[in-house]
Length: 334
Image 1 (cartoon, rainbow, N blue to C red):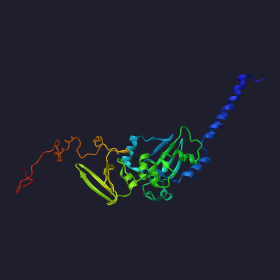
Image 2: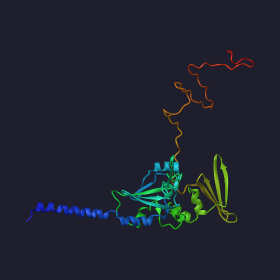
Image 3: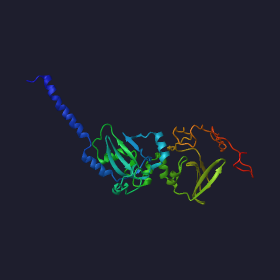
């Protein structure tokens, strides 16, 4: 008969083996990777958020965007612009598995991929020259989204992956207008469906709600410039939508019976990423910056605000000379 303590020690390897087997079963298999690539690569989707252009994309984890942060995203959008805006149609051009995450490239990704002929080089006595001289490093239109997990990529189906990407990509929308409406607050979305303009909307929302304005007038109220979009004409109902910049600040409706309705109080608050202005402070001059001064010559005073630079100071050893007078011999000292 085996002692109870010895039997427990003999049973531990079996527990470890079963635990490892169950843990391995949770990992994404090779067949599941192939199914995800087949199900999502070259898939046409609609963007639900702003995707920044360039080498920095979005990172999605546990159903929310964890990177870049709001301030960094504003800076990226100010520097490079958006690769896709809410409601824009986009294309998943590549699916790549990276450690504990999956990268989905949008509209070609941040880098251009080389064609086979772009890797061909022609050799000669002077060395080799690429057959294609085009720039293949940057893609000015692409971005990506990284779907991150805790420790490893679990067992997933293409449908589950689409559900995880739902906060940033819409796979179910039938049109760009439908995808755009899903990105808006319910109050704004319902107003657009009812073809109603609310104070606080932007130009794109007004166009979605009422269509292109038949008539636009630019005016000035004191120091404020505004644009009036006019919908309708007498004897029908006429609506005047006033925009200052990109925001609706006033809606005036003239009814058929002569009643006048004016709305100026903000009815919706639209939060948009603001562009970050670049710093205009002068940067320090590098120590090894090129200069036209002679060795040992001290820098002159900075240029004044009037735009006229001071005359250069004479260096030691230089002897100032006066200009020769008319009729005199320039070779003789004056």
